[in-house]
Each structure stands twice: as structure tokens, then as C-alpha cells.
Image (cartoon, rainbow, N blue to C red):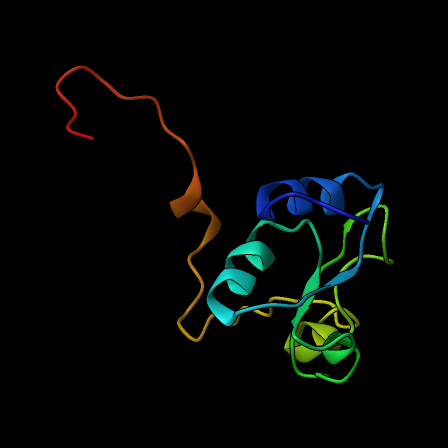
Length: 110
């Protein structure tokens, strides 16, 4: 698709319901700038398929693309886990009377 400048190229690329991955070709500095403005979960620079080969790079799709969080990188495994807190009291438990609420009387200090 023809474009006049980088701003128009970014606008054309982002004018989509999808944003799984993208590729940018050009001088690295400008390509990085363009990549940072693309609404895509992963961007390859000067290669059309790096996003399919880097399995340790976490990415999240934009817009209507993908099925949610990345299956790559640390979050790829963590998405299949459930977090659970297990708390252990190693001291003697307080008796129930110590937990009773009481009304403050005039002159009491907190």
C-alpha cells in the first residue's frame, strides 16, 4: 500500500480491526520509531517472520487478534496456573474474647 511518510504508514497499518503482529523494513532507528507506534502485539524489524521464531518474547495481541495473553515467555506458562495463598500462623492463636469489639467509654484511649 503506498504512503507518503512514516506517519501515514503508521496510520494505514493501524487502520485495522486486527493487531497480532507486524513487520517494518528500513533504517533501524526509524524502524524502531515506527514499530513503537504500531498497534500490534509483536513487530519484526527488517524481517517478516521474527515474531514467529522468538519463543521467549512475551506479546499480547491488540484489538480483535489472538486469544488473549501470549503463550510465549514466562507469562505463557503462568497463564495456565492459578495463584493460591496459604497462610500459616506459627504463634499461639488468640482466644476469641480478645477479638471482641467493645464500645469506647469516655476517657478511654484507643
